[in-house]
Image (cartoon, rainbow, N blue to C red; front, side):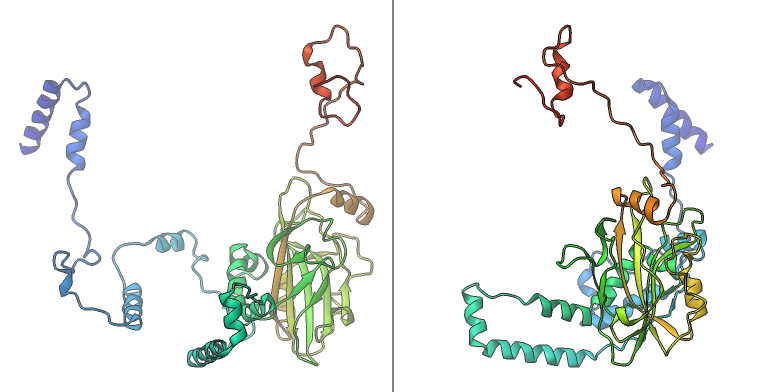
Length: 386
């Protein structure tokens, strides 16, 4: 009876106001009915009118502890993470750490060293004078070394997760790249490999120079692979370079199992990731089953999976370093397919032919006024004053 009265009053008011569609008001009346929540809402016990009565945390550690307890406590509502985990159970699965162990230095030791550096800098007269005159130069080499020893591995790991390196090379696993790789394709710093920077196939044509810090007597394995380049299998990779049993940091003295092959991203497939992975060996390893014939110009022989290679030697190999770059098609890729791989170049886009223009006539007769526009930017000689 009450609902009928509400609907009647709404229809009357709609007629009086001159509204054609009275169903809008009826729908609004039903939508305004609020449903009680299924349980207590967050921060329901807090009195918003009397915030001064709340207990202060007094320290960040106490706040962090209570925040973690609140995050781990069960709740009746579903979060975005819950919906994602239900849709993709493997997304929230815990990944295994397969890298070298990381020993974090004590916080008190870091603070003591930092205070000692500040104390020495305050006593340095030359440093004070250059800072006052604004002539002080920051040594970038020391900044780079400090970054590599402290927060650098964590930043590289975040970049690798962003680019999907661990997901494609080591499914359900990750590692902290504690060893920094210095890779350069040229004498200067114009073609260096960092963490996701772009290089052209022409720049990456020759084998690079690689160096890294290693203990005397240690053995290493270096791998260059591309998870985006395979032409037949989306889950497979192409191995571009593999060197094993590297003594110390001398890559040239290692056992070359597969010689270097330049990048060849197919035309129309966008950017490809080329990933360098450095493994630390427990001792000498026999890689006869993993060696390829030299020279190896067969893509079938270069078909590779990093996870299978690691599972085969996981008792003697531990990933320790990581570096990668991106590459897109250019004219050098055509040369690689035709001359190195001895095959036709696959093209995944429509190549529009150039517009044909007949030779320009010095005195055009019966031509429109826009006749000269087609030769305005041409390489051939053009006549007329523009």
